[in-house]
Amino acid sequence: MLKTQLFILLVVYFICETALLILNHHNIRKNSNHNPFKDFLDEEAFRKSIHYSLSCNSFSILKTFYRSSWLGLIFSLELMSLFLNCFPSVNSLWGQSTVLFLWMFLLNLPTLPLDYLHTFQIESRFGFNRSSHKLWFMDQLKGIFVSACLQIPLITALLWLIQAYPNTWWLWGTIGYTGLQVVLIWVYPKLILPLFNKLTPLEDGTLKQRLTQLGESAGFKATKIQVLDSSKRSTHSNAYYSGIGGIQHIVLYDTLLKQATEDEIVAVVAHEMGHDKCHHLPKQLLILGLGTGILLKLCDCLLHSDWIAAQLHVQSTTPLVVLVLLATAGSLFTYWLSPLFNCFSRHFEYQADAFAAKQYESCAANLIHALKKLYRENASNPFPHPWFSTFHYTHPTLIEREKALQKYIN
Image (cartoon, rainbow, N blue to C red):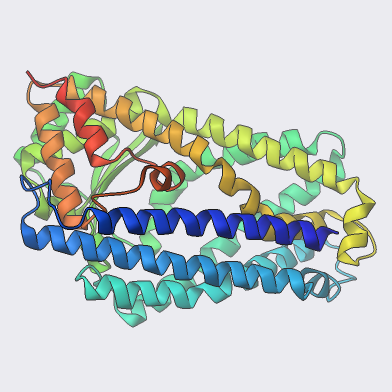
């Protein structure tokens, strides 16, 4: 019965995701003969965006089929049951946590070849990849190490809460997990990011002076404005903000500093400051907390169901059994929530754009220029299908953002 239900969920997911990708592919092809973006995309750049978008989209179709086939194999061969029955006598919390981490590792291991192919085939073919094979391999090892250091203690703490507070563990788990996200905001740039990239303070000069003045006029004081050496892996450019309370960081990709003008960079940073002034990170943490609470409450309900144990052919419905089930099939449920979370995220982006546009007279125009340059340099999809963007885009499209910013230009 459980196997049948999981198969139905998997098939529905596969059909929906493949349909979205096919719609997106068709939309790109349908519009590929006419370039409406000549003001910032010459014919060569336009062709590159079209071909890159089509290649990424085709690869995503292959990846969807590949991952769905792997999940289908897990369900049909009852690999969850086989795996769980390999560890019948693991009783310690640390042991159970390690078993769950091992399952999640095995669950994601078959997707590594796809990541490798995307990096060294598609990204290299279009001139974006700068990562060596050695660097890519070391990144995977470091990623596994960091995941183990974070996830095994976290799972152990969760299992302890289930034992200590059998009726309210899901509530304490939600509070603890949300608090951990706040701690990671401080820990990530200090301990985790340096394992992969180097952060250096923005050099003194007119750009730093302008950013400092902008922050003072906007009532924003960044703890640090830093530059990320992203160019050692890719030529893609971006910037991001991370902060809560007195811990505030603005990080600029070194590729952005090379590709954008000073005016455009100031406008991009004004947008990132907008995320702080509009309190987007605390709001995102609240949304994440609500989602985590719902997931853990579902886990609590499953813990009281002997039906799960019978379906998975194990002795009893232990926390480890439920967590293995959720780790395997959880994405089939959360996939349908992505439009909702993307809606919140796009709303936040519009708010940050509006904040930036009000900082000085030409900021809106400069931000539009910066967005167009980012689209050109990243060869972003110029014609995403509306349904596809609803499910997959955390940011509004360029046309949508430009339309919203135009009202701030006299």
